[in-house]
Image 1 (cartoon, rainbow, N blue to C red):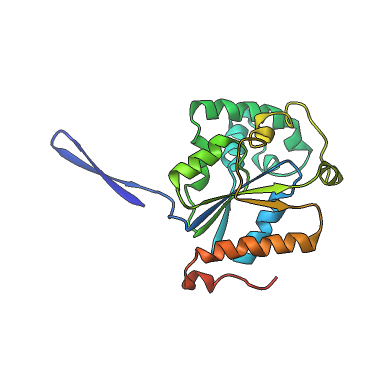
Image 2: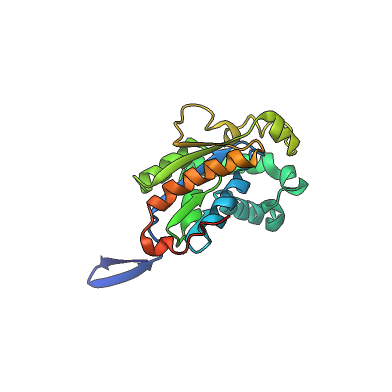
Length: 219
């Protein structure tokens, strides 16, 4: 929360502005459809606990506004079923229009109630997403890419869809981005566990001792 004071004529006005609490670290996750981003970020939050870590999705405010504009079921759009797939391509086009008007529009909405020391932005899709967070939270951002082979993604139900898998929302971070961390998620639990332990070590190094008392060290 911040307080801003402005003056109009001889009158002074005080405005209380709600702002998110400053994080200690911001993990910017990206990855292709069915790479398992949500699975990995859910595991991280479980280890860190919800008291320490919050998952923030840029798609949530996008889907809410889109559902309101189109008179659709917001809860269904949040799911992984056919309902969302039916509207995905049009929702992507609508989101691109909003971003052209204001590249940080959905980023600001996603973090407005964030109040944990660890933020996981689970669905970064464009360079503008990364740029906005890096500008707003310099020295706090860690870019994490979740990768899985096409064979693995296909086994999880992925099928190439024109207008979706060749759009910026899926391909915007394929090139020209240096990721700080790459997590392979092809179904080998032991490999994934080792990678998570290394990333958790980085995260906990940014936290104070009081906060660390809430972190789950066991699986």
